Image (cartoon, rainbow, N blue to C red; front, side, top):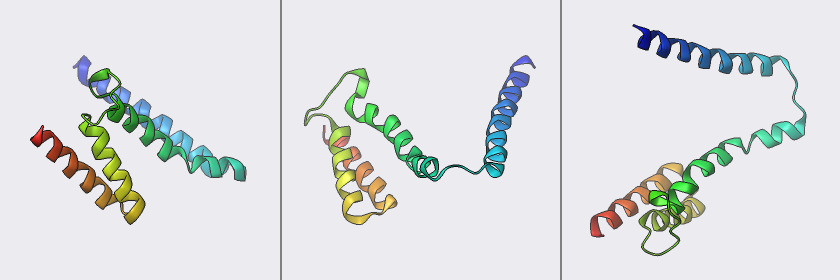
Length: 104
């Protein structure tokens, strides 16, 4: 019972923090420079999650042609640049990663 109360309590606290921020931002007028800066938050967060996984598979730096994740990320970046389509980018990266893992 303690376990479930802890999980529910943590969920409520997390929800309360996020709702409070949304409600406060609804009433506060942010400076245009802050609004411009906030547009880059999703890109920064995704980069912070993806780049270490691509460059450090297994926890060690690997910037070689033997790094399947790096090659798949390069292909995905090229597809993203050429098509500007998120679905095609993800699909291309995953297919290349699967093929390289299957071949290697």
